[in-house]
Length: 487
Image: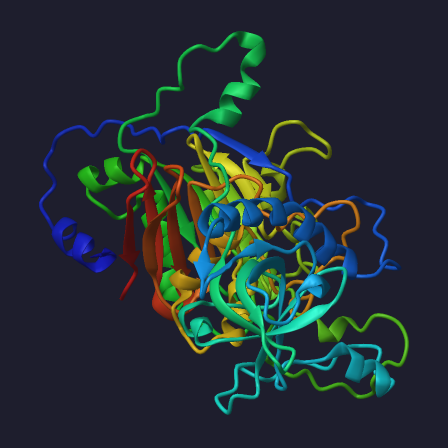
C-alpha cells in the first residue's frame, strides 16, 4: 500500500528542474454498461414475492443438479446406491438420495414480516439487530421447493456458509424424526465466463472487427466508496480535498502525474452522501405536505462540487448506496441527475444509446470496463448476508455468492427487493472477471477459480470515511493496489 503522504514527501519542497513539462493526456476509457438491474417505469407492487424464489430455483437448479449428478452418481453407502429425487416431498425415510431446493434459515432473531402484519404494522419495523445468528443452537436449516419444506441436520453444515435464498443439492437420508440427515452439499459453482472484450466485439460487429482493442499500457481503474459527504461532519474534509487533488494529479511531481494520467475511469461504489444529524428546531410540526426544514441539501451540493471538479478530467460511474438519495429496495435505481445541478451536464440525454461522461447506474451494476466483465454493489447485499453467519470473512461471503450464482441471495427475505415476476436479475447468468462490493469495514482481495478455468478477482472496497483508502485496479492484469490518503 502506498500513502499519498509518502508521495508528497518525495515530490514537494524541491528545486524546480527547469525542464519544460509535457502536457499529459488521460487514458481513454473502454466502457460498455449493461442494464441488467434497470426497472421499467411502470412498477407494480401488487404481486407476491414468492415468484422471485421460484424463478431463482428454476434458473439455478439445472446447474446444481448437473454438479450433484457428476459427484454422486453411483455413490454407494452401506450397500445402498444413492438416487436423485425430483421434489422435497418425494424423500422417503431410510432411502439414500439427493434433492435440490432453496435454503431457508429459520432464525428466531431474524425479523418476520408476518409478525408485523399480525400486529397491524403495515410498514416493517426498523432492524436494530447486528446478527441474526444465535449461538444457543436455536437456528435451523430448511430446504424447500414448490412442493414443501424439510429440515436439514448434520455436522457438515459447520463447513459451509448458508443463508436464506441460496440454491443447494443435499445428499443424505431422512431419519425417524422426519429430518434429512445430510452427508454432503453441492452448489452450482461459477457460471460460464465470457471472453474479454466480448461486449466490445458485439458492438463492433457491423464494422467487422477482427482484432481485440489495443489497450493503453499501464491503464488503471479507480474504485472508491463511502465518501459520505455530510452537512455537519467536516472531520475529514482535508482528506476529501487531497483525494480530489490525487485523482486530478495536482501538487505531485511530473512522474507521479504521468502515472495518475493512466487512471481511465473512477467508480464510486455507494454511500457518497449521508443525511445530516443536525436536528432543526421547528415551531410547529407540519401535519400535511412537504416540510422543507427536514431536508438538508448540503451533502448533495458538496458531492456535486466534488464530481464537477473531476468530470472534466475523467469519466465516472456512480452507484447509489444505502445512505444515498435513491430508492431503498434492491435493485436501487440510479440517483436522479437533478441531484447534481453542476455535474448533470456530463450525463447523457434520456434514452440515449451511449452512456454519458457521468454514468448514473443501478446498484447492483454490471458492465464491461477495459474489456473485463465487472459486477459491483454498494454493499447492502453482503451486509445483510453477514447477519446470517458467525463470521467476518467478507471475501468468503463474496466467494459463496459467486459459487451460488446469486448476487443477493437474502432478497427479498431480509433484504428489501422489488417483487419480480418475469425475471430474477440477481442470478449470475455469466461469471464476472471482477466482483467488487463497496462500503466495507476494510480492504481485501482474492482470486477464485472455477471448474472450467474461470477466474474472478474479488475486491472488498473499504469505506473512505473510515479508512481513507481507495483502490486501483490494473486494467491488464486485474492486480489491485490501494492508496491511503492521510494528513
